Image (cartoon, rainbow, N blue to C red; front, side, top):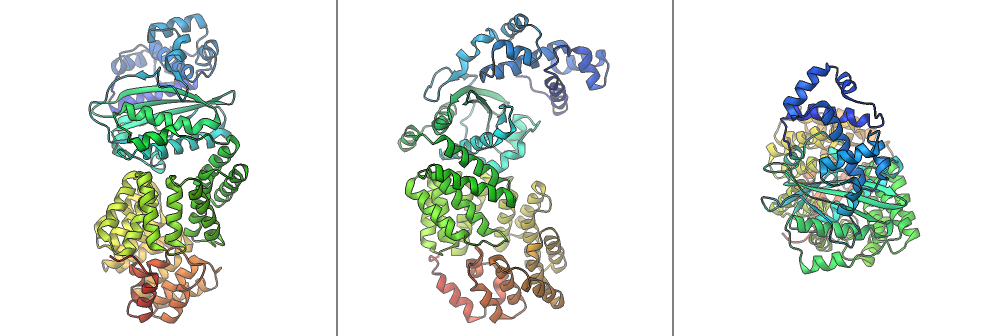
Length: 586
């Protein structure tokens, strides 16, 4: 495999992009490519020869052949249809070129590559990794369906494969949020692997033909040089998608020389079929919720409810509903009966499948944030992590539970595990900064907050963390500046600025924000803000009144641990509140 310098790779990528955009034009050739690049024929010839040791016509032909092979592997059409689709004017000429380049005729591609989900043969092996692979990332799947309405399917399959792969435990698997940053990326496998701190990368593409799903997967090792290890195409109908994931996991484990435990092998062998319509609704639900917009969340929950109406025995949909409603309870808006709905869905999910990590996580979160059954919460968190050691949200929430329990060293370890699984998740990174700040690691907190900005400009939790950290460091002006930006970019967080004003002697400004908050809609988030603000202003009776507000916000138990509540520590009611939580002993 040719390895180019970064500038050379960018040039080759640009040439490839232009050729691919003109596949439908079989008259597109040397002169047309030179014109598109804005240079003369002779200049392009010299540059391409110097970089790739190819003529222009050879480069165009090989680009067409590579795409043709991908489409043939996916059985996206007949040989003739694909030949014309990538720009060959003659099927005979295409077949000759294909045979000369690959060593076999195009008609034999599917014989070599395609397998059913229950087959373990007919796989392309390209090499053996030089070192044992301990970490991997699954890049966003390419949508070859030709139909944007199928984006939910491609997204859902990508999400599911990451989740299933994460259950292997012996390897670190990067979470979906971080790898989605590489959608349509022009970076090389090696560059992506280096940024994600992984040793291997999986690429995949999805095609739907006659109602059946074809998935082509490729596995690459990234170091010391990029090397393709394996490729295979699977074909399956919607009802057997879970079996496809199982088969893929077995293949990947084999290719990276990872031994499966007897329990894992049994779980992969005993895969259920799904109701196609229910599973489609489930995937649509997950896709819409991930958009993180009010309309997206609403539509996503509607799809998940549809999924359980179609199949009341679908645990994934119930777990999705529970986690979706818990997300609402975490937010700054009216949670309504989100806790009640989350609890109903979580209980049903675990009743149907107690070995579903997401079901264990949902029940852990309910015990943690709603019913305050902290001992039970820890048991659920541990089981979720046991089932899927790469479930970043399980590590994240468990970290904050441990912080509340006073087990600070363990909390840092868990949060770092969450961050390593999802390094480009801005919220998770920012709150890792918050934990670091609360434990006196101020430089780490500032660094992590700034890393969040690199992923999401003006990330609200990052401004929150910076302000809290500067306040703890005695840098009052910098704390106020950070929280002013927080209030500007995320108005529901304005009470944080009010608290900072109060603690730094700007009582008039704090009371102005307090008055605005008192006239706002009443919900758990605003009640939390009122409690913090009244505490910072020394009005403790009002502070404890709002701490007792129901339905409470998920942060309320951390009255026991977060620095924003320090003004209340000397009041006997604070110790009484903490005692009433009945936290696990440190």
